[in-house]
Length: 495
Image (cartoon, rainbow, N blue to C red):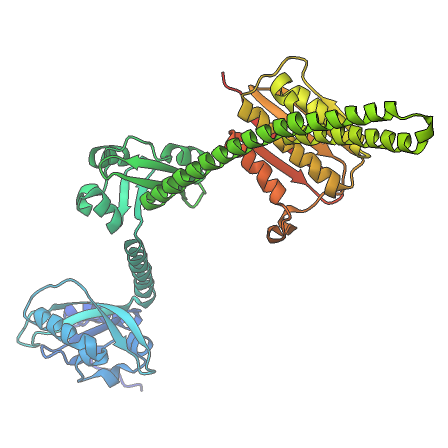
């Protein structure tokens, strides 16, 4: 027979009753699961900051096992320069304070350092368990290093913009100041706080008396850099402004950078240089006028005095020839030859005196003088000369007419001497309130940059440009090897 287990005296059978456990056990188990699975280093310290417990994340964060941390002070895992601050922070937590998270470095076993953020609080003391410091430490190395790099760039930017002597202001799309450097604050004579968020136009008007727009609207509308120079009444200086647009990730303009550079000394130097140039031009004009008067006087002297003497000599030779009979045939021939030489001398005197100062220029004006000069040029050279003159009468002041004629002389002389040209075209006309003179040849041309002025090449070109500058004319010389040369002179006519 099978033995039967004795039944309880109650006489009833049923499922066994569950064993009741403490309420804290499930919460503790859940906490352990979270601690073991957390990516953060979860720890418990005593009030002396010694490690009582560390989660498995210690291996990933510090490169050591949780057991290796037991009994060590938590701040000992930090670089020496961070330990004092960390010790003070943990002491404040142990005293019951709740300070903000501690940002610090951790020293890994492999020698690397990484940035971490630690939060902690003190637990209550009970009869079963003394007070502890419980907390978590998480890896923020990537974020912190990015933040450090950003700050380094910002410091470099601040150091750069503060080191420059230029005033730099960064503006938003509404042209309000969002950033400013020290030179800009010095220019405006305001602290930084009173400059930021101010409308730049109102700010410059109030502080500098500057009403100019500084090209900001143009830069904002066009999306291109805009430059200007303005006079600042309150500072009695010239500023060169450069407004450059800022763009967002989509390429849209969302602000401006305004750079202001003091160019007062440069403007003053330019003014001094301009005054010096003006004095030189006045002096050169004076010498040119003296030279032209001297040439005119010399031309008259040669024409009147020498011409008269040569004419008298020609008449005497003709008279002597007429008195010689047939028996003096040889003398008659010599006398006739002397008469011919006298005629050539008289013609040379007329030519020289005319070239010194053409009387036709004074008597009939510039167009007639141009026509005469081109006709004479064609006689003395192999050039085919074409002249185009306006039908209406052009009247110029004597210095202007003389300078234009001298430019024509110099240009045509260069053609004859250097161009090896076959054709020359000279045109004088009026257009758009200006008088234009164009001299063009089909010669061999040249590259001006290759002319050696120290050896005298190109001085004629400079002379033409100087003569034009003295009468307020613009002289443009265009030439290319094998393509001929064009000299274009433009002078505005007085209303």
